[in-house]
Amino acid sequence: MKAKSKDIILLLGAGASVDAGIPSSPMMIGKIEGLLAQHDWSQFRDLYHQIKSGIHYAAGIKGKFNSDVPYNIETLVNTLYELERNEDHPIYPFVAAWNSRLLAYAGNNLQHLRSFREKILDALKNWVQLENPKMAEYYSGLKPLQRELQFPLKVFSLNYDLCVEGLVEQEFRVETGFAAIGESRWEWKRFDETNPEAELPEVYLYKMHGSINWKRDNAGNLICVSYSGNIRPDQMQVIFGRDFKLEAADPYLFYAFEFRRSTLDARVIVIIGYGFGDEHINKMLTQAMRFDSTKRILVVGNTPDERSALKRRDEIAKRLDISPEAISVLTGTAKDFLKQPGIAGVVLKALPIQPVAEF
Image 1 (tube, rainbow, N blue to C red):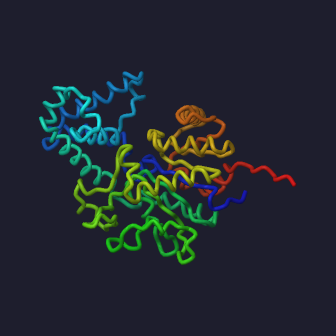
Image 2: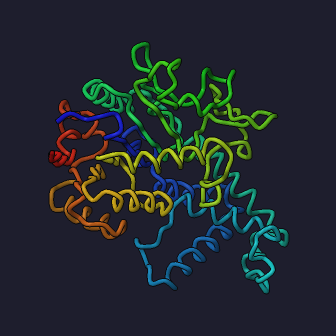
Image 3: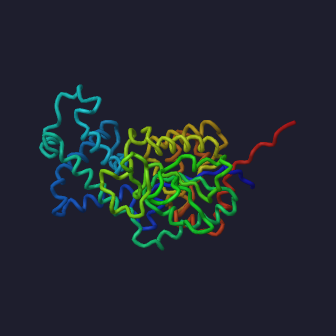
C-alpha cells in the first residue's frame, strides 16, 4: 500500500531507549531511591519520603493505588517545582498553612526543594547519556523505513537522549532545528517542508520535552552544544509538567502545535515505548482519533506474547477512551521492532484502506 508524507508519524517514549541502556522514567525513581542511601543524597531522604507519600495520598483519594498511581520522575520533579513556587503559586492565598512535616524537611523557606530538584536533574543528565553508542544501533531501523516510504519521517520524541541524532551520516540527515552545534539558534523554519530553498532531511525530529544538549544563551536563544556536561542543572532545557509543556517559548509550543496537526493528518500513528502516562499527549491522541475514526494507532510496548498484547491494547483504549479496534499492539520490544527486516511492510500494513471515491 502506498503512503503519502502526512500518512505516518512516529512517537517515541522512554521505553524506546531502554535497550540502549537509558533508564525509563520509573527506573529513574529506583535510581534516586538507591542514591538516597549515599552520604551526599541522604539529606534529602526524609523530604523524598514526604513528597512521595503525599503524591500517593492524593492518588488514593481518587481511588488509585499501587501501580495505578502515576508516579515517576516527571511527577516527582514537577511536584518539587510546584511546591518550590511557594508564594508565587496562584493557590497560595487559599492555603492556610504548609504541612508541618514538609516544613521540617524542606526548610521554612522551602529552600531544600530547589536543591533536591537540581540534584535530580544533574543526575538525570548522566543517566540519559549513551555510554556505549553501539547499544543504540537498533535505531538505525528508521533508515530502511524512511527509504521505503521515500519521504521524511516525522519523529516526535518525549526523550532527552541523543539516540535519534546518532543516526546522522552523510546520506542521512536528522533535522533538529539547528544549523550547527553551538553556532546557531533554533529556527522553526527549518521544519517548514514548503520552503523551496530548504533541502528535505530524512528525519524531522521534534524533541517535545527538550534535550540534554540544549541551553539558552544570554539573549534567551535556544542553542545546541556538543557537550552537555557543561550545562548547569538550572540551565537544562528539559521540561516537566503541564505549565512547561505549554509555555510560549520556542520550541515547546511549536512542537505541541506540530504534534497536534500531524496527529490529525496522519492515518497511522506509530507509538514506540510510550507508557501513556502523559495526559497532555493522551488528549491530543484522543482528539485525533475522534476526528477520524479510520485512523489507526500501532503500538510497540514491550509485550512478550499475543495475550499480553491484547490486554495492553484494551488498557490503552480505556486510557484514551477510544475503540480497541483502532489500536494494534505488537509483541516485542522497541529493539525487536526497529531491527526487523520488514519494518516498512509492518507499518504500511497498518494503513487503513481508503474508500474508493464515487463519481
